[in-house]
Length: 86
Image 1 (spheres, one colour):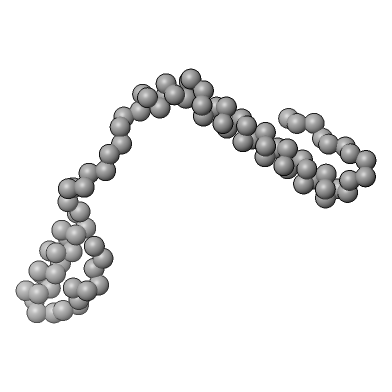
Image 2: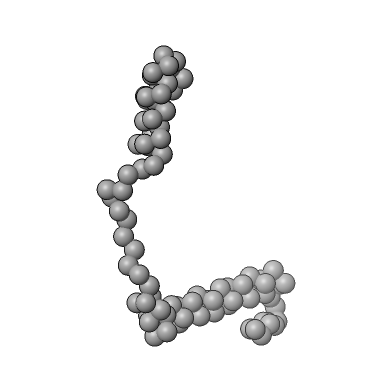
């Protein structure tokens, strides 16, 4: 815990603002210290690689196609082709 700042001539609002800035600066320093530590580097290296599969089929698109085909067979047009987002 950081010590309270007691500066003569500062208003309570100024003291509060200064304390928040000091705590914010301490937080940023601590986050930077932890994120660049050797322990964090080892942890990140142990994680599996993340890769987005571009050619994976979209199950919702397949279901929407089946829904379009079924409604077209019945002759009712409840969905228009322009409403689907791609």
